Image (cartoon, rainbow, N blue to C red):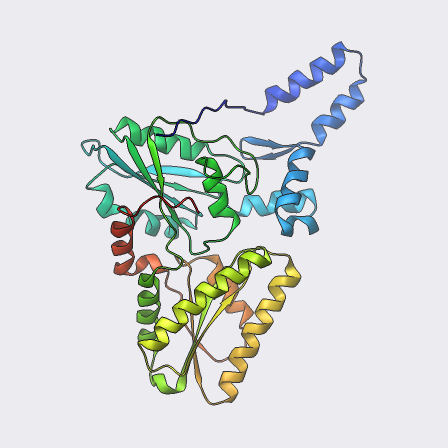
Length: 351
């Protein structure tokens, strides 16, 4: 059993007022206090200090080329962190399920919740959505709600198809499986429940089967068609090599069970510095162009869980090229629910 103790710290307007008062008492000029307050940036209910910006730039390579204002804009685009308790009040049990996700546009968030409807009807279940970059409060609340419904063990399911990335590590940190936060050092979860961290679906054969179904839905003559599997991808190069190896596994399975001429995996590294992403897009475009010039029809798939903004980026990245694009998220496929039901029984995988 794991017990995590933590102390909540809230920084808001009262903090700034207290700071100003303290400086006045010790005789510091009012201008100095005003400058300190001005240096803070608001993100939702959280105040960003210069120290926080420094920590983010150390840990997020993309932010090293961003101004403070650009970092704030980037985090605002990520959307809110929130939780939804899925089960009805009469659903109780000693094992609860907490599904974690990146957070999406409104339709995507609903698709994410729908993927756990079957589980929620059988045992206490909740979802926690958002990057957890600045806060873990939504995750703590979900854990508290699950234990209130009788859960003595909580299976935490990290729903992401980027196994080696900051989001997965941040979740692991929040539940005490990693010593260092991937992003901000947010409070760790406090609970008397036993925590089981399930694996991500990233490398599971079920994903290969879903991708093959999606490719077949757009296929006309497989022998003269090639398939590109495009992943969001992690930011760091070492992580990216590991993710590309996983995509090769999916490509091999699809080739072994189809007549497609070729299947290739690509990572965008969508949150990496702009030059890195641009290089990856260039490689993808070159591959699509070469296939088209060779008389092959190109089918583009993604490993994204729901349809959202990244599919729109890919469409812009491939503007002017000839290809078929399946934008459906993996969660829409009925086999994804099979993975969810299977993974609940898988032993702990801290990642």
